[in-house]
Amino acid sequence: MKRTFLSISVALALALTSVSAMAAVRPDVNNDGEVTISDVNMVIDIILSDSADLAGDVNNDGEINIIDINTVIDIILRGGEEPDGPVVGGDISMLTKYEAHQRMALGYGVTSAYYRDINNQRVNDVITWVKQQGWNAARVRLFVNPENASNADKGQGVIQNLDTVKVLGRRIKDAGMKFMLDFHYSDSWADPVKQFTPAEWADLDDEALTQKVYEYTRDCLRELKAAGATPDYIQTGNEISYGMLWGPVGTPTANLKKCYMGNEANWDRFANLLKAAGRACREECPRAKIILHTERVAKVNILLNFYNQMRNKQVDYDIIGLSYYPYFHGDLGTLAIALNNVSNSYQDKDIMIVETGYSYHYSIGDLDYSSTWPLTYEGQRKFTADLITKLKPYAKVKGLFWWFPEANEYGLGGNYWSVLHVNDNWYNAGLWDHANGKALPALYELKHFVE
Image (cartoon, rainbow, N blue to C red; front, side):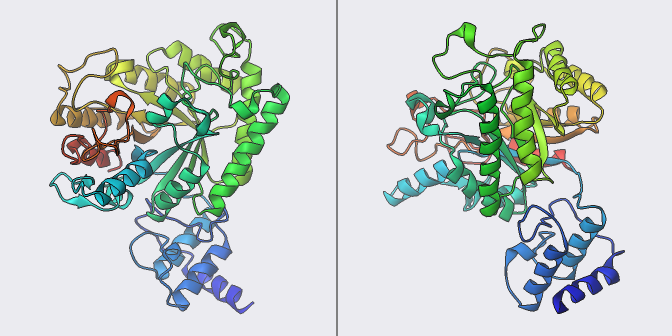
């Protein structure tokens, strides 16, 4: 009773105090999915006990004091909503794998196996370091059971089970960054040409599968919350332009439950799956934003048909998530056409570029823009700067995420410790150079999206 009285007294005394620098706040101090007087109490306890518990550093300024109390109170008085500012970062799903291989290599005397900054100085903790470079968010993918993936897919990055995501998610949150969880409702890559049902779910009919999606989503979120890794953004599916959970691997093409423009088959089924996933998100993480992720930027009619279907079938979500890679989708003018259409047609939704990238060395994909953005450090940086310039006028575009920035085989390639070991097919659109381990200029450029 005494503690509650103290908290209320502080709230009344400080309710009108303005709070600045709210871009990376962490008001859910006790990590129960809500921002309430309990969080105020916990900050007060941390201050009174002279504890160094980082959970009390709500505004992430390196100190725990009255400003942190003010921050929580301000959010409570605004109905539990955090500032809705822009976020920038990358999908760092392979980071723990690289770190493990670097430790192994270092243990055997390969002294070059680590991340470096642009000045060749060692980066000891990539997550806290990118935060210092202006990133305020990171994304991590989750597979149902990646052990069932092919060896080739495992070699190219299909390793993220729930335990992996707990570790990365907690580190992201502890660094004061927003955490985006990317559900691949599959045992391996889910994208426009692969949306295969997990092996353990293969025998479920549509009704049972819908219930399984709800239960699986709910249980994953509960475990993440318990691990201190509550997501701020949740993708219920990855690049789901043509639906998801089409059927298990090996299903005849004619029997795959895909969704197509001009064909109403399977859209109701797909909507029910998304509603089940979304219901679990709202129940377990009520303050998280739900993202529906597509990649038909170059085919606006398909893009609009998808989100029209979502609206007509009353699928609950907050953000239109888009993939945009120039070497697959086209130039920035193509992206602008897509953004104009979705921002005008769905004015109640925010938009995020949840995947992008461009090579600094060697071409990728079907389209060549090397005359506009050379395949060099500077060309990659210029692409990043031009993309940000194109996005800035769109008030609804609230996020930008680079895909696989952490790729860095320096000190590992050609050795036992190589991470992307299948045919040595390194991804050359990351933000560290495989040849020397140094961070690239584009990494530093990304911060301008949130400035």
